[in-house]
Image (cartoon, rainbow, N blue to C red):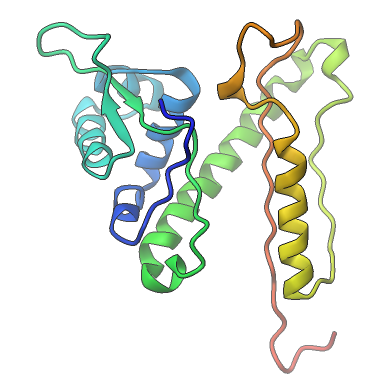
Length: 194
Protein backbone atom coordinates (compact mmCIF):
# COMPACT_ATOMS: atom_id res chain seq x y z
CA UNK A 1 0.00 0.00 0.00
CA UNK A 2 1.43 3.33 -1.04
CA UNK A 3 1.72 5.92 1.72
CA UNK A 4 0.91 8.52 -0.91
CA UNK A 5 -2.74 9.64 -0.83
CA UNK A 6 -5.15 8.92 -3.65
CA UNK A 7 -6.33 12.21 -5.17
CA UNK A 8 -9.30 11.42 -7.40
CA UNK A 9 -10.11 13.41 -10.49
CA UNK A 10 -13.66 13.65 -11.93
CA UNK A 11 -13.22 10.37 -13.83
CA UNK A 12 -11.61 8.25 -11.08
CA UNK A 13 -14.06 9.60 -8.50
CA UNK A 14 -16.69 7.43 -10.24
CA UNK A 15 -14.87 4.47 -8.74
CA UNK A 16 -15.63 5.70 -5.22
CA UNK A 17 -19.10 7.12 -5.80
CA UNK A 18 -20.85 4.23 -4.07
CA UNK A 19 -21.29 3.70 -0.29
CA UNK A 20 -20.29 0.03 -0.40
CA UNK A 21 -17.07 0.87 -2.22
CA UNK A 22 -16.22 3.45 0.44
CA UNK A 23 -16.81 0.82 3.15
CA UNK A 24 -14.80 -1.83 1.28
CA UNK A 25 -11.85 0.47 0.71
CA UNK A 26 -11.91 1.45 4.37
CA UNK A 27 -12.02 -2.22 5.43
CA UNK A 28 -8.98 -2.98 3.28
CA UNK A 29 -7.12 -0.02 4.76
CA UNK A 30 -8.10 -0.84 8.32
CA UNK A 31 -7.81 -4.64 8.30
CA UNK A 32 -5.41 -5.33 5.43
CA UNK A 33 -5.77 -7.49 2.33
CA UNK A 34 -8.90 -9.59 1.83
CA UNK A 35 -10.77 -11.64 -0.73
CA UNK A 36 -14.24 -10.76 -2.00
CA UNK A 37 -15.58 -13.53 0.25
CA UNK A 38 -13.90 -12.15 3.38
CA UNK A 39 -15.14 -8.64 2.61
CA UNK A 40 -18.66 -9.98 2.03
CA UNK A 41 -18.62 -11.65 5.46
CA UNK A 42 -17.12 -8.61 7.17
CA UNK A 43 -19.59 -6.16 5.60
CA UNK A 44 -22.71 -8.34 5.50
CA UNK A 45 -22.88 -8.40 1.70
CA UNK A 46 -23.01 -11.05 -1.00
CA UNK A 47 -19.76 -12.25 -2.55
CA UNK A 48 -21.11 -11.25 -5.96
CA UNK A 49 -21.57 -7.65 -4.80
CA UNK A 50 -18.12 -7.36 -3.21
CA UNK A 51 -16.48 -9.01 -6.21
CA UNK A 52 -18.14 -6.57 -8.61
CA UNK A 53 -17.27 -3.53 -6.51
CA UNK A 54 -13.66 -4.70 -6.03
CA UNK A 55 -13.29 -4.83 -9.81
CA UNK A 56 -14.68 -1.29 -10.04
CA UNK A 57 -12.27 -0.05 -7.36
CA UNK A 58 -9.42 -1.75 -9.22
CA UNK A 59 -10.46 -0.25 -12.56
CA UNK A 60 -10.08 3.23 -11.08
CA UNK A 61 -6.82 2.45 -9.23
CA UNK A 62 -8.04 2.38 -5.61
CA UNK A 63 -7.27 -1.31 -5.00
CA UNK A 64 -4.74 -3.73 -6.46
CA UNK A 65 -4.29 -7.47 -6.32
CA UNK A 66 -1.97 -8.65 -3.56
CA UNK A 67 0.69 -10.78 -5.31
CA UNK A 68 1.91 -12.22 -2.00
CA UNK A 69 -1.38 -13.97 -1.27
CA UNK A 70 -3.79 -16.29 -2.94
CA UNK A 71 -3.53 -19.51 -4.78
CA UNK A 72 -5.36 -20.61 -7.89
CA UNK A 73 -8.53 -18.65 -8.49
CA UNK A 74 -8.52 -16.99 -5.06
CA UNK A 75 -7.85 -13.28 -5.54
CA UNK A 76 -6.65 -11.17 -2.65
CA UNK A 77 -7.03 -7.40 -2.84
CA UNK A 78 -5.36 -4.58 -0.96
CA UNK A 79 -5.79 -0.82 -0.87
CA UNK A 80 -3.49 1.00 -3.27
CA UNK A 81 -3.17 4.05 -0.96
CA UNK A 82 -3.39 4.72 2.77
CA UNK A 83 -5.94 7.52 2.37
CA UNK A 84 -8.01 9.48 -0.11
CA UNK A 85 -7.95 13.27 -0.34
CA UNK A 86 -10.49 15.39 -2.16
CA UNK A 87 -8.33 18.50 -2.25
CA UNK A 88 -9.15 19.71 -5.77
CA UNK A 89 -11.45 22.72 -5.28
CA UNK A 90 -12.96 22.23 -8.77
CA UNK A 91 -13.96 18.59 -8.18
CA UNK A 92 -17.39 19.39 -6.71
CA UNK A 93 -18.16 21.61 -9.69
CA UNK A 94 -16.84 19.18 -12.32
CA UNK A 95 -18.34 16.00 -10.81
CA UNK A 96 -21.09 17.12 -8.41
CA UNK A 97 -23.04 13.83 -8.27
CA UNK A 98 -19.94 11.70 -7.80
CA UNK A 99 -18.54 14.07 -5.17
CA UNK A 100 -21.79 14.03 -3.21
CA UNK A 101 -22.11 10.23 -3.46
CA UNK A 102 -18.54 9.76 -2.21
CA UNK A 103 -18.95 12.26 0.64
CA UNK A 104 -22.25 10.66 1.70
CA UNK A 105 -20.45 7.30 1.82
CA UNK A 106 -17.68 8.80 3.95
CA UNK A 107 -20.20 10.48 6.28
CA UNK A 108 -22.01 7.16 6.70
CA UNK A 109 -18.71 5.46 7.50
CA UNK A 110 -17.91 8.15 10.09
CA UNK A 111 -21.31 7.64 11.71
CA UNK A 112 -20.67 3.86 11.85
CA UNK A 113 -17.31 4.50 13.55
CA UNK A 114 -18.90 6.69 16.18
CA UNK A 115 -21.61 4.09 16.77
CA UNK A 116 -19.00 1.31 17.07
CA UNK A 117 -16.96 3.40 19.51
CA UNK A 118 -20.03 4.16 21.64
CA UNK A 119 -20.66 0.43 21.91
CA UNK A 120 -17.06 -0.27 22.94
CA UNK A 121 -16.25 2.75 25.13
CA UNK A 122 -17.34 1.17 28.42
CA UNK A 123 -14.64 -1.47 27.93
CA UNK A 124 -11.81 1.05 27.45
CA UNK A 125 -8.88 0.60 29.83
CA UNK A 126 -8.63 3.28 32.52
CA UNK A 127 -5.66 5.07 30.89
CA UNK A 128 -7.78 5.68 27.74
CA UNK A 129 -10.96 6.91 29.46
CA UNK A 130 -10.11 10.64 29.35
CA UNK A 131 -8.82 10.62 25.75
CA UNK A 132 -11.98 10.43 23.61
CA UNK A 133 -14.30 13.30 22.84
CA UNK A 134 -17.30 14.04 20.72
CA UNK A 135 -17.30 17.81 20.67
CA UNK A 136 -18.91 20.48 18.61
CA UNK A 137 -18.36 24.21 18.44
CA UNK A 138 -20.51 26.67 16.51
CA UNK A 139 -18.07 29.19 15.04
CA UNK A 140 -18.72 32.29 12.97
CA UNK A 141 -15.95 32.47 10.36
CA UNK A 142 -15.13 34.13 7.09
CA UNK A 143 -14.09 31.86 4.19
CA UNK A 144 -10.46 32.91 4.77
CA UNK A 145 -10.71 32.00 8.48
CA UNK A 146 -12.27 28.64 7.55
CA UNK A 147 -9.36 27.88 5.24
CA UNK A 148 -6.90 28.97 7.95
CA UNK A 149 -8.59 26.71 10.52
CA UNK A 150 -8.52 23.80 8.07
CA UNK A 151 -4.77 24.29 7.44
CA UNK A 152 -4.08 24.57 11.18
CA UNK A 153 -5.94 21.33 11.93
CA UNK A 154 -4.03 19.46 9.20
CA UNK A 155 -0.71 20.89 10.45
CA UNK A 156 -1.50 19.78 14.00
CA UNK A 157 -2.43 16.25 12.91
CA UNK A 158 0.78 15.95 10.85
CA UNK A 159 2.79 16.32 14.08
CA UNK A 160 1.54 12.92 15.24
CA UNK A 161 2.42 9.38 14.15
CA UNK A 162 0.13 8.03 11.46
CA UNK A 163 -1.10 4.46 11.66
CA UNK A 164 0.62 3.56 8.37
CA UNK A 165 3.92 4.86 9.80
CA UNK A 166 3.83 2.64 12.90
CA UNK A 167 6.98 0.59 13.13
CA UNK A 168 9.71 -0.57 15.47
CA UNK A 169 10.11 2.96 16.89
CA UNK A 170 6.44 3.14 17.89
CA UNK A 171 6.30 3.51 21.68
CA UNK A 172 4.67 0.89 23.88
CA UNK A 173 1.04 1.70 24.52
CA UNK A 174 0.45 3.39 21.14
CA UNK A 175 -2.88 2.23 19.74
CA UNK A 176 -4.87 3.05 16.60
CA UNK A 177 -6.96 6.19 17.15
CA UNK A 178 -9.48 7.57 14.64
CA UNK A 179 -9.66 11.34 14.42
CA UNK A 180 -12.63 12.66 12.46
CA UNK A 181 -12.92 16.32 11.58
CA UNK A 182 -15.85 18.00 9.91
CA UNK A 183 -15.76 21.68 9.01
CA UNK A 184 -19.20 22.35 7.53
CA UNK A 185 -20.34 25.85 6.57
CA UNK A 186 -24.09 26.36 6.96
CA UNK A 187 -24.71 29.57 5.05
CA UNK A 188 -27.67 31.76 5.92
CA UNK A 189 -30.11 32.72 3.25
CA UNK A 190 -30.47 36.44 2.46
CA UNK A 191 -33.68 36.72 4.51
CA UNK A 192 -32.33 35.03 7.66
CA UNK A 193 -31.48 37.16 10.66
CA UNK A 194 -27.86 36.87 11.84
